Length: 142
Ligand SMILES: CC(C)(COP(=O)(O)OP(=O)(O)OC[C@H]1O[C@@H](n2cnc3c(N)ncnc32)[C@H](O)[C@@H]1OP(=O)(O)O)[C@@H](O)C(=O)NCCC(=O)NCCS
Image 1 (cartoon, protein in one colour):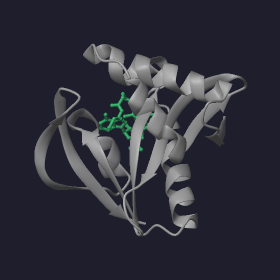
Image 2: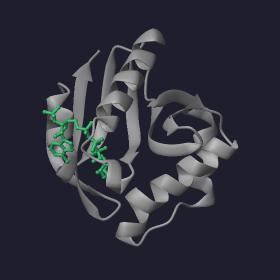
Image 3: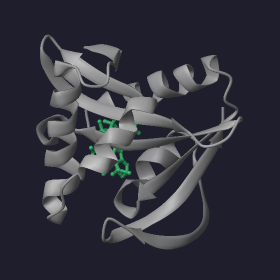
Image 4: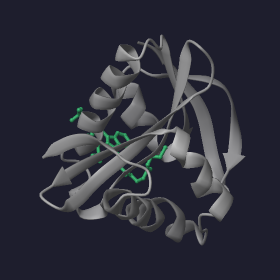
């Protein structure tokens, strides 16, 4: 498996958007808007690949000088629970650290809190709704 940064607009980016749609949006009956995808050109896009096939992905967006937010973490259904998500997180954390960020945060789906807790993140604040489901802000010092 290769972990790498994806160029916005590339063939790999299209594979990433398709994966995110299948795992994160379609089950909720939601789609990506053009505006939403347009904004991604300024984000750090990360993918896990086996040859030409995308296995998982996530993204990093700067929120302030010290902090960036991880979003759109997804692993293809049949490969979940095999360490791909953890490998993506470690890769994303190293990238964020190399770029000078001190904290990493995310809007974690309630169902994924245990995954992030195992990686050292803690819940901050109250439950809130996003894309129709319950989320919590989680954070870790890098
Ligand atoms: C959540 C997700 C990204 C985790 O990736 P993954 O490749 O399945 O996770 P890993 O195999 O790397 O798991 C790492 C550890 O977290 C645990 N874990 C994984 N998913 C978990 C979950 N949902 N809840 C609690 N623990 C979880 C694993 O058991 C493993 O524990 P271990 O290190 O003690 O063995 C993936 O399951 C997924 O895409 N889920 C659907 C989309 C989603 O919810 N994305 C997150 C949005 S915030």
